[in-house]
Length: 329
Image 1 (cartoon, rainbow, N blue to C red):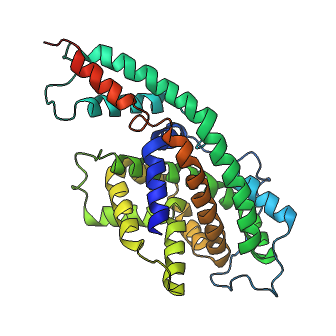
Image 2 (image 1 turned 60 degrees about the horizontal axis):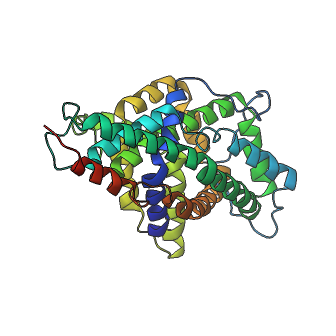
C-alpha cells in the first residue's frame, strides 16, 4: 500500500497538473461518454456478494471489452493533451520555486519577466513531451492491465450488473460525476504534495468538512485505495494506508472546498444512488481491478515522466542559475 501511494505521489509531482487541470477546466459541462449505450432503466445492485470462485463463471470477453471501453471513455481528457491552464499552473508554481526564500521576488523585480518567459517556454515543451511520451504509456498500460484484471476479478454476473448500471441514466451521470470529482481530488493531491495549500483551508466548519470528505470517499482516487487497504487488512497484508488516505482526503477537502461543494450541489439528487453503487459487491470487485491497473500504469509511467520533470531534468537548476545571474534592482 505504501509503495502504491509513493508511486502515485511521484506521478502527481511529475505530471499532476497536466493530469488534472484540463479536466477541471471542462468540469462545468455535463459529460456523456461516447461509447455508452442509450440510457435504460437502472438496475438494483446487490449490496453484498462473494469473491470470484472457480464455480462462478468468469466475465466473458465481450463483457470485458465493453467495460474497458466504458472506463477509458471518461478518462480521455485526463490522459490527453495538457491545456493552456496546466502550462500556466506549471509557470506559476516554478516561478515561486526559483527563489523560495526571496520575499521580494515578484512581478516588480527586474528579472521577473525574463525568468518567466524562459520557464513558460520550458513548461510548454514539458506539456508537449507529456502528451508524446507519458500519456501513451499510461493509456497502453492501463488498458492492457485493466483487461487482465477484469478477467481475474469479475464474474459474468458482476460484469452484467456493472454494464447495466453504466448503460442506465444514473450510470451516465455517475461517469460524469466521477470525471469531475476525480479531477478535483487529483488537483487537491497535487497541490498537497507541492506544498500549495489554500490560505483559508482551516476555517471550514466541521459539518462542511465531513460532507466534503464523504463526497471524496466516492471518488475512485480514494475508493479503490480504501477497498485495497481493507483487503490488505483482511488478508494480513500491509494495511498501513488508512492514515495517509485520510490525510489526503482531508487536505483535498480543505484545498478544493468550493469545487467539491459545487459538485455536491450539482449531483445532490444522485448521491444516494452513487453511494449504493460504490458500496455494492460488483463495484468493489471492479475497484480492485481499477486499483491494480492504476498501480501498473503509474509504475510504468513514472520513469518516463521523470525525464520531463523540471526538478529531475535540470530545468529548475537552470532557472535558478538564470535568476541568480541576472542583474536586478
